[in-house]
Image (cartoon, rainbow, N blue to C red; front, top):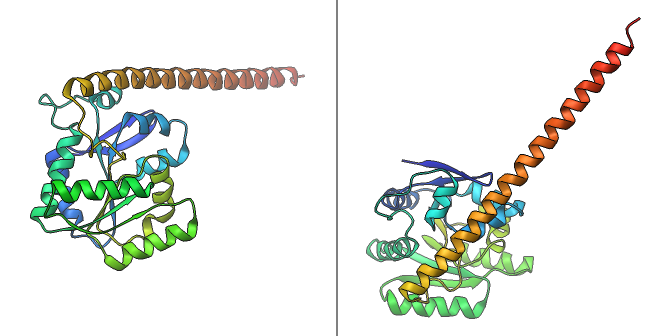
Length: 251
């Protein structure tokens, strides 16, 4: 069942992992492109300051939550088994299903070397994954048009993107309706999946990131409350001034 999460005024369409895979398989049968994004704490913090990131995340059809801190910030109850915020499990299960279903995959990124390294990693770890091409998003509009034309020529079932925000957000906001693929999956990282950090190192990194994110969310809420209080005070002053003028105009 869909959960409408709201974090720092960004609305997210969140499902359990089990539901997410069923929905992605349905997307494979659609005639238009659907977007699936792994949503990170860094992206949400950025969305509070960047309208492109906020618009892109809000428009995302299916959001995979990267950390329980996001659920907590949205006031949602985390899965008791921790299975709905497991980014690596989502990544591995997604690729396994792509292999089983024999779906074609196109890789997109920003840095040519990292895209190439990602392709090598997938070819090594998922030998039967049908990778039919890869390309890079550029700051040049003509090169982006060439990339879109290439995707539309090979017609992949899935585009796996390792574009980071805000590059991915601006690209999707501008070109989403021009891309002919079934599903765009934004993994949100150049390196997370090709590298395997130690367990304890990963735990401590997440703890630090969660604390920073919690501080950013609280700062955002405080700033918003101050702005609302200021608006209310201005409106009260305006009404008081209007009432005074009305009183002064009486004979």
